Every structure is written in structure tokens, then in C-alpha cells.
Length: 285
Image (cartoon, rainbow, N blue to C red; front, side, top):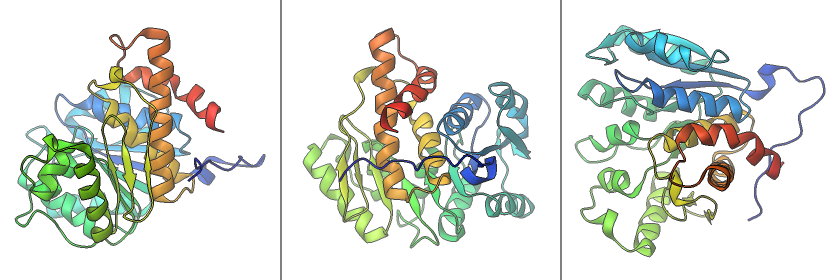
């Protein structure tokens, strides 16, 4: 397929025309993960970006970027607390969003796993799940949670996907076998799956694309959080989930290639991708 593209912005546009993103995550020691996702979401064109984070890191998360909003949530042991009253707050935030992302820096607990599974099943909004959100889904007794109530994008690396589908040895399997399992999973569960790797594989079970941008310098902490923010922003601007995942992976890798060309692969860090996102997006517009 040809590379998806965002439509031109009308002259009389306002911020509400480009979507409201809600990113849920962060925990003690992991404010940077949700901050990177939020900054990437802004740089990728979302009109309004809100981070829902535990109150113990709200100041730190807000300090990374003044252009997004933060919503502090009650915390427990450095993670988002998800008692019944807290779930009502999160559901209300989600209902006001165009697209919701869960996972960057979220941490893991039994209560968080229950929340992620409930969100997966019940949120009507498009939902992008990464990192600890995928690990939370993998904690269910049977390894899966049932059909979703809205569009879903899952962005695991092979190790996370192995836990998700309870396949021992999957992360070491040949790439062709990984791709086949990913395709089958996306088709049966009716999701968009972005399986990270040297050539990231994106599929909805019927359509599929191998992304060829990117380089080994991107094998560093935080780059997946940036990808989550990019895809969320593209969905906020009206792209269907599969197209957003395809364009998001391409732009993410392109930004990494621009960064590596200027800085070298060894010195590349995740925040460099955000600085090079404008150039990457201009290249594909």
C-alpha cells in the first residue's frame, strides 16, 4: 500500500479539529516515559494532549513540556491507584478524548492489570497499548481478555508478544514465524498489531506492511514511548488505526534515521527522535 498521509490543515482550523489525546501512565522513577510519549504526541500534531499520571510524579511530568496538560491521579506505592472511585475519574477522562494511550511507564500490579483489561474491553475510543499495558493484558489467567469495544492498536516487541500469547521461545523464533503468529493474532482478536523489530511488522490480520525506516541506534530506552505518542496523535487527527500505525512507524524510524545521520547511532537517545520529528513529518507531507 502507499504510505498514508495526513490531510492538509484548513486555514480556519482550531486545536479542537486535531483531536484530544489522553495518555495514561507514569510511575515513581518513570516520569520520563509518559513525558516522552506526551511530547511526541504534541510534535505529531494532536490538538490537545493530557497526561493522566500518579500524583507523586505530576510535577516532574509537567516539567518536561508546558504545552501539554497533566491530570494527577491518586497513587499507591508510586503507581496509579485504581480503586472504584478512581476508575470513574479515568473513565470520564477517556470519554472526553479522541484517542487514549495506556502504558508508558505505567508499572505493574494486580489492580493496574484489572484496569487495563477493563479499559481494553469497555472504552469506545481508539486505544493504543504499549509496554506495561501489554504486560497487564498478559497477566490475565487465560492470557487474553476478549473482544474490544473499540479500535485497538497493540505495539509489542517480540518478548512482550510472547508473554501476551503465552508462547515460550517466540522471541527467539525466526522472524517469518513471528510474523505469521502476529498476523493470526491480529485477525482473530480484531486488532491492529505492530510487532517491533528490525523491520517492524504492522497488520490488522488482512492488510500488512513491513516498515523499513529506522536503525540500531534506536535500540535505547524510551523510543517505544515516542512511537506510542506518534500513533496516538495520528489517530487524533483522523487516520484509521491501521493507517496511523503504518505512518507512525515510518515517521518514527525516519526521525531516528535523521537523528543518527547527524548525531551517530551510538549517541542517539529517545528525546532526539522528538527533535527530528518535524523534519520527518515534513518529508512525508
